[in-house]
Length: 191
Image (cartoon, rainbow, N blue to C red; front, side, top):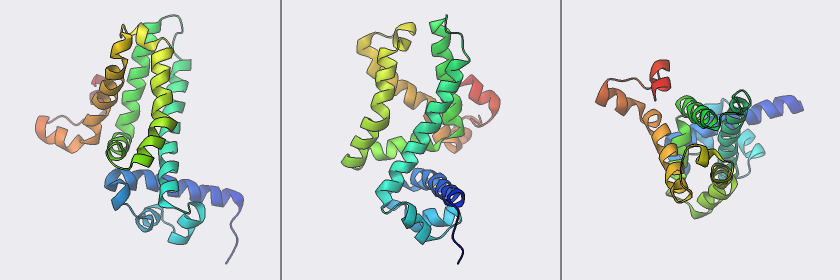
């Protein structure tokens, strides 16, 4: 057996995390298996456990991946928007978030599933990823630019999270109910 280079090991790890995001979103933590994740990644079980000694660590890596991609997208977009018009910055941040959840419907499913399950994973997810985003919304001036009163920020945060993502997370329901395909570019932009 040939030894893999550090680059090959890194690529294998990335394939595993990418597969884990999908499998955890589709099945939830409890029903997902590292064997199923290995199959989705096109690798073997041993390589999964080499990189991630526990399913919990793999789940955390999947969450880190989703939030990292979201953060990069929002930061890149924010850098390209006029800094002189705070309302336009807010609008563009919302547009980019909608585009992200349209491309990653697993994001909504991932959050909802663990938001109702394990206390330890929920605590970790909130403390590591949601709280910093909430605090940014609260303290960056974005809420003020959108005329959101401080007492309404929690409602705005969850309303935006849910309203932006649900249509893409249950796209087949939307198509059957309304005839609208939310995955189409014009539907995404309208949303």
